[in-house]
Length: 305
Image (cartoon, rainbow, N blue to C red; front, side, top):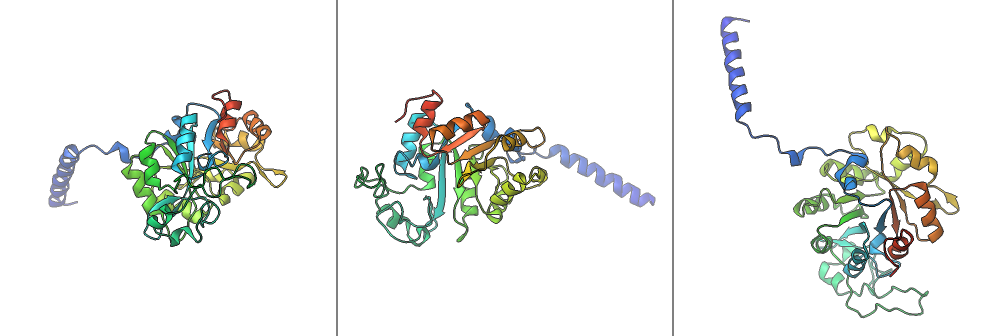
């Protein structure tokens, strides 16, 4: 190196050192959070297993409505589970199915309705607890809820959000809304679609996610590779059974809880009391159920409602 080059190098090094000293510290809020069971979503848990109200407790009230989530929160559930689609005008709304037919007095795909049109539908219209003999919530003014309404109503609750819709895509809108409401540590996002969940992880890296169907199959086949990936899941949400075949077993839970994997396990959708007992005995971290009241009673945390 010539004398001139050395002098230039030293000068630029001094300038870089001074600039680094004057630069503001890195924003810790933007740092990548711990993953798996160490993620803040899970370290906030106060019970084990946690009671996760599927659709707000769709076996006890009309699901995916503010009415259901209010009742579930009042019971003392740990997590509210909800499913999102988008309306024709781009609003994120809660609906389990792709169409409004199964739960309301309307017809057609969710994303073909505007929010105003959805709000005119009766979201309690088809709910029944006796096989269709009675419909106690018809005409009660219960409507489909928006994600923002639920965030505003329950800012301290933790939520399990399943992305049901792939097209039109809604990952960006969901990530933006989570950020606006400061819910990054209170939300666990799920999707059956590998493409959708990977896109969400890349776009919203601070938020916990559960394993996709493909990742669950890999894990059940004996691979722990999912925990070594850059875009990795933070939890396993496993269906209790497929037809008469047990899917969630002691072996699955034990492997998930091993130090190498360190992933919480949530069982879904568990509605039978005997199955709830089995999940408790397996040591799962959370139970997703349409009947949070009976589960809470079984756990001796509150009476059924």
